[in-house]
Image (tube, rainbow, N blue to C red; front, side, top):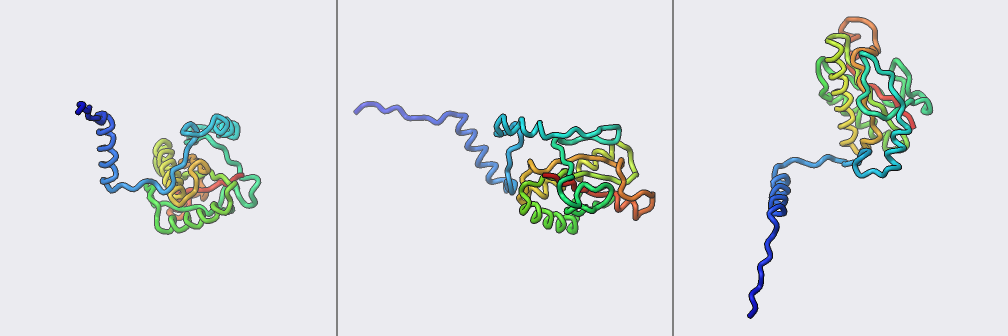
Length: 196
């Protein structure tokens, strides 16, 4: 009887299998929807189209673009109105010094997701806004956190992430002038500009 050589699994394969098994047992759930962003599995034509459709944002000391896809909202009735909430997607509010979504904000975003699922050609720019308290840098960071939390929740509801752009205006564009609690509460928000 001839001697048979036993096959061995490469060490790298064993380590990879162990890591996959460990991740599966950790209890972490995958995101509800995984979408490719430009540069991650997208074609060169998709990337070129995304760059061509990008509109520059007028940046200044209090305004910073977080991602690079433009949205004007000029072709959808009632959208893109500034200041205010006259568009098809109502603003959501945040508590002081927080980017956490309240139950009311989640309910509003669930209605937004239903509307967006029926409007598959619509793209949304999510603007993160803050009240006047705090430094410019702090409010830009907080506005970004608010916009990103909003985008992540919409993506978890099935809205493709490439349809959602985030931008932070910090305290630069208040909806309600004033320094009282009512004005502050109105200015702590995520605002939605929609476009095709």
